[in-house]
Length: 224
Ligand SMILES: NC(=O)c1ccc[n+]([C@@H]2O[C@H](COP(=O)([O-])OP(=O)(O)OC[C@H]3O[C@@H](n4cnc5c(N)ncnc54)[C@H](O)[C@@H]3O)[C@@H](O)[C@H]2O)c1
Image (cartoon, rainbow, N blue to C red; front, top):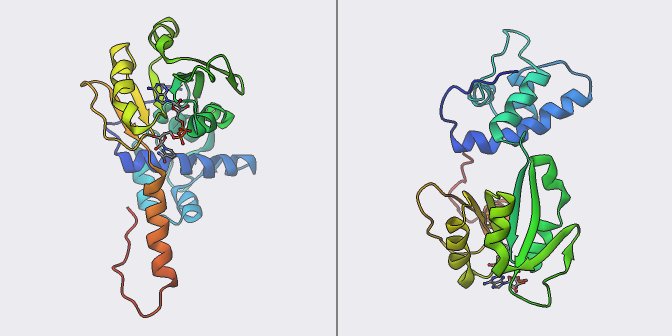
């Protein structure tokens, strides 16, 4: 199937697509062949208009009354998320977080495969996180070049993160997923994504406060 994406896809749409995929795969496992925007919207408590708009960004066309052919919709979402092409990645920092990420085999189903971990702690070098070997960080550049790695994950302490990001960019890494709590500078053309669990916690904490407080006023929270 040839996918035609109609234009730029907004980031909020990209963030919703994995939930659509989960719901649609669930329908498929129940033997459903056609799925409508309304069916997805009901599961996720979104509006059908929103879902239809998001799905239209993937380039797939639905049929009036019946919706989308389920396999085509699954393919279109996976294609647009780039999950149809396994991306080999490295991770730098084989500490608590690095080990959790490198050891998580579930990334495979998103097309992400961490094939090497790097650390400067000689006691860790030569060890393994599951199937992933830990190498000395001095060998990162040659590993990246030899294995044509395009994605690097940063899980070192904040003070070491900029140096690692610069080194990653210098040896050809094009996407950096940064977990360190530091705003990093990277050259134009390198995609930088920071993930911070504290941000997610802030949302649940603020919602919880509103849920449990009686008699105090808090401005409402609006989901985007
Ligand atoms: N984004 C999030 O939600 C989130 C959650 C937890 C931790 N973190 C961040 O992730 C990072 C790692 O946290 P952790 O708990 O795993 O720490 P940790 O101390 O357990 O692990 C850090 C690892 O990095 C290695 N390291 C340090 N400097 C290095 C360098 N220059 N080159 C190569 N390796 C180096 C250390 O030897 C260690 O193995 C920290 O920046 C932390 O703030 C982020």
